[in-house]
Image: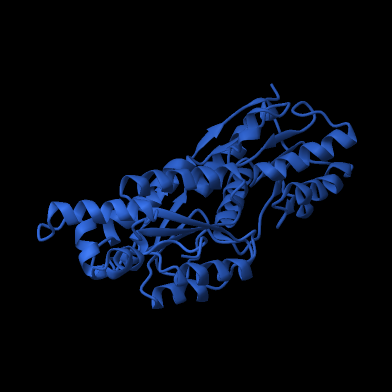
Amino acid sequence: MNSRKRATIYDVAKELGISPSYVSKALNNHPSVGDLIRRRVKEKADQLNYKHNSHAANLRRGQSRTIGVVVPHINQSFFSDAISGIEEVCFARNHSLVICQSHESYEKEGKAIETLIHQNVDCILISNAEETISAHHLRQANKNKIPVIQFDRCLDDFDSFKVVNDNKAVSYEAVRSLIREGYRNIAFLGGPSRVKTFQERKEGFIAAIDEANLPIPYNFIVENALSRERGRQAAMPLLKLPNRPDAIFSVSDYQSLGVMDAAAVLGISIPSDLGLFGFADETFAQLVTPSLSTIDQHSVELGRKAAELYFQHIYQQEQMPETETIVIASEMRIRQSSRRQ
């Protein structure tokens, strides 16, 4: 045998001079196989380092017992924690994960979906890239009889189960907390406006500002500044204005790091000169100085719920059930960066 080729059931059968089906019965302890033959087959299988191909066996049963997961970034705490929640549920149900990341690219997301279709996964759980505006690739999965569950970032025009946070409500509460601390010129750093998650966070910001009868200068709302570098680039001109913001609410903790970078360069002190509130409760939020006020999205629970939807409503069902949207309540984590008083 080629040393790089994995042993198959046919190799075991050839070595023993018996049929592959008989080897299969022996390995699966079929009652029609005697103890002596069963023992010889298992010894030969061990000798050849044969491993049962569960993937092929599952395909014969019409299932791969594999779930595909597509996220924008694996190395961000929010997404890694969501994957952890998904994995916890799948492990308990003896299912494996295939994890892909889009790096916020629609093209890469489409290729990831194509790969998962070829892998014949049983379901795809996805949080969409910031570039994604079309659900064509998700519909391709459905055409291949693969259900899709969206979480966190979801496309409205694609019918699926969705698991999201209360983005508007918790953003409203975060901005209200800044106002209670005495901040009055509050700016907003957002994500791509076409992504509903970021639209809702912007709506919550505007609702709190309007309720307090505070002004929103046209240049105090900056869209599509999702990364640390974009956050720094957006914050620098804002903080140089004669009537600069005295607080910034951002839709991402990485943006907030960029704001901290800009404030440090300009000698602006946080929180006395500038309040700052982030979103996602990334691991570093408690470690930076000052510690970052942010939103805990309970991402492990969000991932867990997305996986549970598959096993509770789709797994082993003949027909796709009526879809629904599940909302996971978020929670403010008020730390030093927004405590002015």
